[in-house]
Length: 222
Ligand SMILES: [Zn+2]
Image 1 (cartoon, protein in one colour):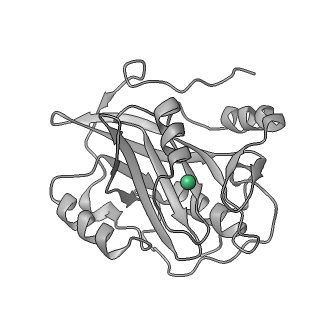
Image 2: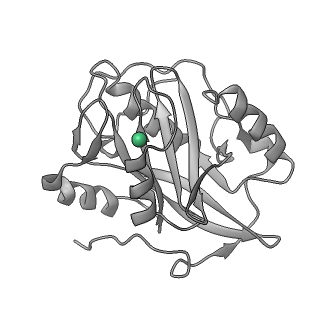
């Protein structure tokens, strides 16, 4: 089993391709009013971050699965980096996680569960780069705490790396990145592939399983 590396942009192959077209993107429905207005101002020029509908649902459902016990969740975001018309953007296609060591205000991968994470990564059916991470703040809104910033600086300190924070209680989501060491909010779009239904429902059912997203059955029925 090969252990994955978090690949910096210079090691990743950056391919030339246009971003998802405007008829295949949408704002996330959990954006705050401020983020909605940032989304609208970014829409014309294109985004630096596109998250697939499937990855978004997995992250959101993962956070919702543990909302009653108010536990944080986290995982890695997997995708690709592209260039188009002189601009770089990142696409998150899927996510991976494993057993967590979590409380209301902290979360980390269970140190005994890395093999499970690697197995989960081995099952990903496409060539990916780890382009960031997600975690939840059950009830205390989306921002980067000092620990979050440390994680970002230590592991995801390139412009192409994003941190998605989800508050499943207040139903908020925001993405962040580092620019010259400072945390910035990053507007992003949800996209779907041509063969997928563009339907973007308003309800997500609570899941009462203990399964991690990569083990399937986590994406809620529409
Ligand atoms: Zn945090």
